[in-house]
Image 1: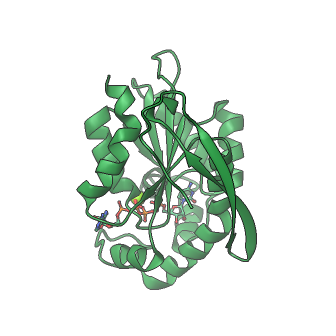
Image 2 (image 1 turned 60 degrees about the horizontal axis):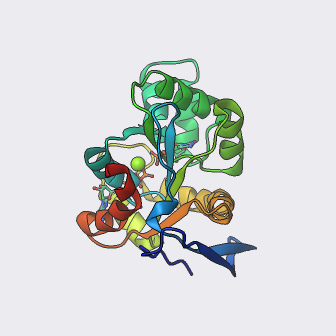
Image 3 (image 1 turned 60 degrees about the vertical axis):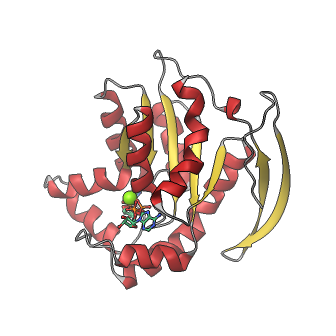
Length: 231
Ligand SMILES: Nc1ncnc2c1ncn2[C@@H]1O[C@H](COP(=O)(O)OP(=O)(O)OP(=O)(O)O)[C@@H](O)[C@H]1O
Ligand SMILES: Nc1ccn([C@@H]2O[C@H](COP(=O)(O)O)[C@@H](O)[C@H]2O)c(=O)n1
Ligand SMILES: [Mg+2]
């Protein structure tokens, strides 16, 4: 359904829609053919924001580490911020912990505030915001609070079976890395993430990446998206 072409034309941009069924609802997703020149030119005066989307275990955090190394972004993982909040003994800690255990979404106000604090305390202007937005509510809260939209949205597309396998092998002691929570996270992903993906696809910002293969193979699909930044 999706195709990304490193086009020779700097002005080439074209999209067409395809209907598909997800979680019982029919969505119209846009096939977008984009050229590398479509990512906006970053300027130090304003933040350059990339949202990183994908199901649990699709490899978002792994690819973010590679992008940071190659292109000098600051990596902000919404999940890591929430886990840090639990570890800090904050007033929200116990609610966040039970929400993560259940594979549900923490209220947007909490997550957006944590992201905002992280962005404001950084000297960098290039941000990778990983695992966010997880829902339309997340997306709208970010826009309202931060007052801007992302410049680029990456979506790591991975089959469920592969995501489950990766999460169960992760071995980092996460409370949500067990089969029951993974099932719930996948259900929540299906229900709440597709509208966000569809939204950014219609705005021509979405880069869908097939997340099957080795870490390096996948990164070679990511690299051209940001190549204009290294010029
Ligand atoms: N291409 C890959 N092939 C095999 N294993 C991978 C690949 N990419 C990542 N992994 C492994 O899969 C596990 C999940 O990866 P990662 O933590 O990056 O996913 P994630 O999308 O951030 O997941 P979550 O949403 O749960 O935080 C990790 O143990 C990681 O080392
Ligand atoms: N925008 C978000 C991001 C995460 N959560 C909660 O944290 C869990 C772990 O997130 P990862 O990105 O590290 O997988 C996730 O399952 C949610 O419970 C959230 O609420 N909102
Ligand atoms: Mg992660």
